[in-house]
Length: 316
Image (cartoon, rainbow, N blue to C red; front, side, top):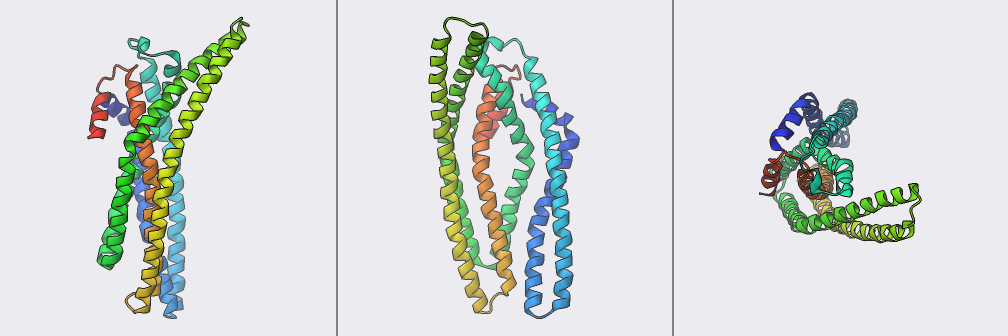
């Protein structure tokens, strides 16, 4: 799988490069725009209105550029997704030697769902890497600005990472169970369709079995999503409380004449970026666990045996 994944990504080289460029512009502008808003507030507070007007114009233009690059980024995302999805699907359906390893339900869901999860993971990978870099840029700014704010940010970040990764195994196990129940449900759905279409005498018993499998899937899906959402809400709740403390402390710094009032806006914006990125981190954790599970399932019908190389690398 590793060599074939490299081959597939190479075929989408143009889209990967464009996705990287647009993502880089977006993340850079997300850091630059709050700086200009902060300077605008400071200039207006100091009654330098002419400079404030110029800064507003510059900030507005930067914001327009941000949404323009965001549009290009989203457009490229879909182009990259479509190319990867098509390539993975063609690679998978061309494999016939291992088809007997799995049942019809699992095969259907691998083609419909697991390839989709794998493609989503790869399409979002560049953005996720840049978001991690953005973390360190903001940390560096906080360190140069105020050690207390930096320390709080780092401590909260470490706690959140521990929560996410400690819950990773539980999330993966629940996802495996969820997919297994979906496979069973899909098999019974095929049988039910066949029975109804051919007006077979055992339709009632098949309906009963389908209902049972459907309830099992709904229960497994509920357990999986409740855990995911619970983790995210706990994390965001802690971060929100820490944000209020940092804003309170920033107001104190203004009162003591240590910073200008516009700097509060910059601190708030950057800390809000961290919150948003941690929200994304919760999604990344879930996406990563789903990606690993889907990659293992895809390997069942694929002769791309070095798929396990990817899995091993990602689990180190």
